[in-house]
Image (cartoon, rainbow, N blue to C red):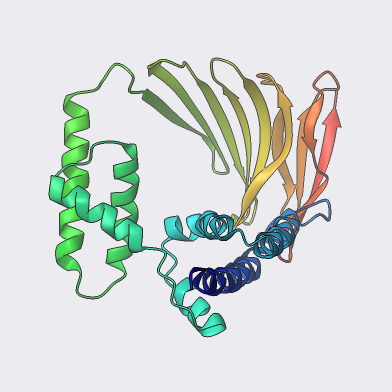
Length: 282
């Protein structure tokens, strides 16, 4: 009887995980392609291979963990379409918000947000209940918890709480420079970012200098309307690295041969939106 139930559960989770991968592929495939390589498609192809292995090896635990891992992003995005899709494709009922609701009820009962995990849960649950009819009372309780937590944090900060100072300087209509430094806390940080907006206003290129106690890097990333990712990167803080828009479909990155690149792409795309990257090396 136990073996029969496990087989049923194996078949259920095998079917649900495969359908989940298809759901994610449909929305994310071609969302960010580097030099002709669709890393998203490759990732989900590998996920299907691993799912089949888990099923063949009768590893129900791994199928269950894989489903949790795959749906984590949907949980944070508060994707209410996923359950409907799975029901239509597989016939199975899946509620990825069940545990979140239970954890949030505990937080509401205790009357306070105790840590960052609680805050994440309350924030996600708030977005969930805002999209559900007749949950105004729950929304009010969660909003009150967040306000109370914010007030408590402003009154009393522990020695290990990081305090961030943020300065935004408008260089011109298309450029912002953002400087963030850590004034207290156990791990001093350096963060400077310059943002260049494309002429048509639809994309952004970011040049970021980042460091903590152990590591430092300078990298360039591109924001499309629905996806973003790094296109160039090197170790260390290198202020001379710059990036700007030559036109709506071309980015120029200025760097030096002295900075070995750990990431360097020349063409990226998000669906039908293609951007070419030109390099100037001194």
